[in-house]
Structures are given as C-alpha cells and as structure tokens.
Amino acid sequence: MPQGVPASVPDDGLTTRQRRNRPLVIVHTGVNKGKSTAAFGLALRGWNQGWRIGVFQFVKSAKWKVGEETAFKTLGRLHEETGEGGPVEWHKMGEGWSWSRKAGSEEDHARDALDGWREIQRRLAAEEHDLYVLDEFTYPLKWGWVDVDEVVETLRTRPGRQHVIITGRDADPRLIEVADLVTEMTKIKHPMDTGQKGQRGIEW
Amino acid sequence: MPQGVPASVPDDGLTTRQRRNRPLVIVHTGVNKGKSTAAFGLALRGWNQGWRIGVFQFVKSAKWKVGEETAFKTLGRLHEETGEGGPVEWHKMGEGWSWSRKAGSEEDHARDALDGWREIQRRLAAEEHDLYVLDEFTYPLKWGWVDVDEVVETLRTRPGRQHVIITGRDADPRLIEVADLVTEMTKIKHPMDTGQKGQRGIEW
Image 1 (tube, chains in turn brown, green):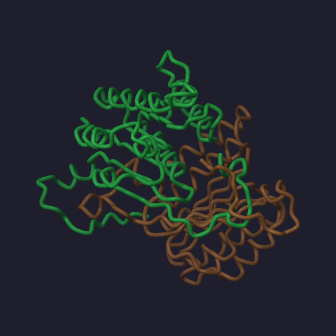
Image 2 (tube, rainbow over the protein chains, first blue to last red):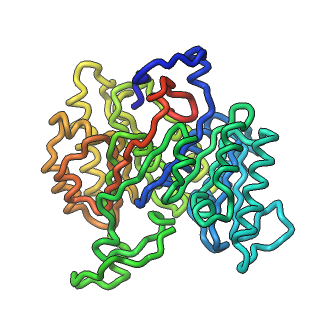
Image 3 (cartoon, rainbow over the protein chains, first blue to last red):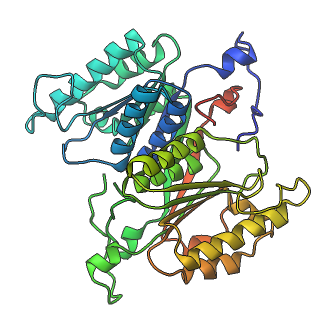
C-alpha cells in the first residue's frame, strides 16, 4: 500500500496537486514474468476510473493471444452497453494493425512496428487515450526498427495527461531516463528451471 | 513471450503434460510497485479461462480499495449473467471477512489475519477456487500472526489443481522455497523519489 510519503519535495514550482497528477511514463523490464501482466493490471485500474485505454501489442504472431485480450474486450463492450469503466481499444501488430489496410506482413516486421509507432504518435498528439500500453515495445527499439531518441522526444513532449506504459526486456537507458516509474521484474525462481513448460491461464 | 523451452528436463517421473499442468505457488515480492497489479493481471488471465477466482486481501483498512476490485466484481457479475469467464469472489480483511459475523476489528488485526488464513485452508481442502490471490499476505507472516511453516505445509499438500499467488514485501525464505515462480519487483525508479505522491488510477 502506498503511504503517499515522497522521499523528498522538489523545488520544481509545482503544487503537490499538480505534481500528483503529472502523467507518467512507466517501464516494466527485466527477465522474469510479470511485465505485461502488471501493465494490464494497471490498465484494469485505469479502466475502472473511466480512462480510455489503448493497448498496442508489438508481437509478431497473430496467434499470440493473452487472456487479458478477451477480458478487456469484454470490459470495453460492457462500457459501450452500460457506461461502466472506460472504452478499450486493443491492437496487435501480428494480425496487422486494425487501422491499417495492410495485412500483417510476415516478411517486414520492421515496417509494421514503425507503422504502429507512427499511429501511437498520432494518437498522443490528438490525446486519444488516457492510458497507453505499449506491450513488448522494447524489442522494436532494441532492433533499431523504431528510433529510441524519437520515442523519448515524443514521450517527453506529449500533451495533456496521458500515461504510457512500456513493457519488454532490455529497456534502453534513454527510455529509463525519460520514465517516471521503472520496475525490473527480477527472476528469483521460475518453473522452467525445473523443466515445467508454460501453461494456459498462467502464461497466456 | 514464453518460448516454452525449459532449461532442463528433470527426472521426476512426470510426463511433459503432467509437469506442464502442475499447479503453481507464485510469489511476487520486492519493494517496487507491480506485485499486486501483476497478481490481479494473472487473475484476469485465469478468469478468461473460466477459473474460479478467489481474492483475499490482507489489508487493514476497509477504505483501501483498488480499481481491480470493482473491475473484478463487474467480471464476476458478468459471469453470473452470461457465463463468460469464471466466478469471482473478493474478500477483504479490513472490512471484516465477508464470511465472518464479526466486523473488522480495529484492535485485533492478528486475529482477523488468522481467521482469513483458516478460511483459505478450508477452501484449499475443499478445492473451492482454481486461483487464489493472497494479497499482502507476507505481512501477517512477517509479523508472526500466521505461522509460516503451517502455510508452507498447507500449500505443499493442497489437493487438486489450485494455483496460489502470494504478494507482499519481504517474503519469508521458506515461502520462496515452496514456491514454483518467484518474481522480485525491483525498484529502478519511482515517482516518489522526485516528490510525486500516488495518484488515482495508478496507485489504486
């Protein structure tokens, strides 16, 4: 439970209230499980506040589907029907971004990733969501498909009050620098160490 | 994305399938955010599989309420109405456990915590849930309100296929020993370091 006691009060000219409501860039990195799961958990929290949730999964396969996708689509439909929570959009690179006429191209993931980022830039400029989940987004950055400095600059100058969560291993130091909250999911113990494969409901 | 490649294949007499479907004890510990959030994210995944979800929050205050509580109650209601996902029960120590006639006692958290654990033991024996979230349960253990060895023994001998997730700082080494999957949420950076307090939708 957060006790709400900051370690220090900075001389940044902001009131406590202004500082409290600053939008956050959040990074979940590290080698163990929990990066995406915790991001979707936060999105659930945001949904409950009525936030407009935008999930962008930078995964290569259209077949890859986590349970959260169905659950969030259900919550989004519920919002449309009853007004509870907030609206949800869930986009996946592997099946071809929904806004794109192009099918997901097996041969050019780099182009697909950049297309996804361009759309996110456009939405950030237009303030279309209150919370963005850029799932597995560290990989296109790592592989040079999307320029890290450009991402950092876009995040730094984004208007309004938009929270952005980025997940994936090996987060670039520049991304960590621009982030407000960075958690590393450190492996203490994993079932695969003892020969157990992933299972439904736990891994996806 | 799990690649499903175990580090080694143990000589435990189990088939891959049997090993894959072993129920897990999962511990989320460490000082940073994401422990409970990732647990609720996993519960969302389980809900989508139709699992019977039981959340037990070992928090002292009845006022403490995370957004996930409302979202999960909504999902549980949806299950009752449409059959989607699984049933959800959400119990909180601070408001007096719902199965108890006693109100939450401001004066005796130790007794309340033990009452909660006894009920969880009973449910594990009866196989009432497929996934248990014991949120902030490391604290009653740390403070000696609930006996760690007894918890370990109960988890080790639980019947059937019941997953148990335990969250909180300072997980006891015996708990880590009995767990299959342990993630430590390590702090790299936190907004409170720069004087920012917790905010709605992010912290709760």
